[in-house]
Image (cartoon, rainbow, N blue to C red):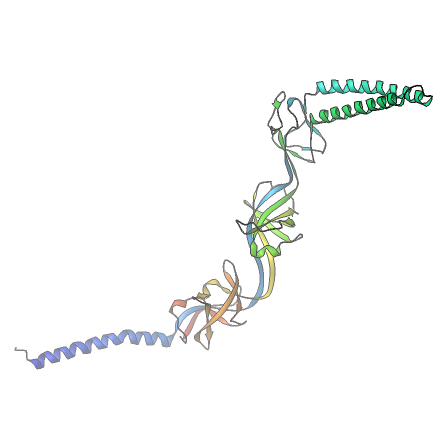
Length: 352
């Protein structure tokens, strides 16, 4: 069979006709899908109570803590402390060798006794002009000088007796009987663990919320129980490097599980919003200049601009743009266009 130009033109026409028919199939499917509507999940907005709070890190510390060190060098001759036991303020914990000071003290006390007797006799003599005023003044000076020496010796003697500065629990001692120590020797650590304090830092923008008496809650690792604390004081300035404000709270709920040095997760409650409009986080569509959500309006998709506030793990507070009772689309957001027909597969009416 011989092909003529007429035959060639007919084949080309048939090819373009088939291509045009095939290209109309997706358009027909898309139109059919638009008419039937995309199945989506939705959430009905209802007012609820929102606690505005932040979570920060903190550290538990003893209310009082000090490393006991001697004021003078010497040899330990007595140890009166038990590790892990509580002691009262003023209890002698460790005593250094002080026999030489005691001997000097006894000598000075004897000299004082003699000087006082001499002054007593001269006091009678000066009344009858038996001695000069100069001799009497010299006797008085002698008594005062010896008394001052005794005071110095008593201070030196007191430095050899290392006492507890406050009521507390004794830690692990670092020395033994007979050890030679100096003012740089750490003997033992004393802690007041009847009360604990909680140190934490707050970001600069929340610094105005920290005031004496502010209530906080915290938990520690391995314990789900919540403990209460009350802010005692804070620094009077923001740290330049971290832009945080340091604060200190007193723990009001003592427990044997709370130990100094433990890491704490602190929850600082800022305020409570009674009529917050909370929607799922995934319902918000971030844009370059704003944020949007998709509302169901008469069965069709409607895009609205919203202003959001606090966000947590599952919800976000919408400050403006929606009203109670609005239906928010939570799935299929990437496939919806303004005016698209909606079919619901699931509608949530309770809390998230």
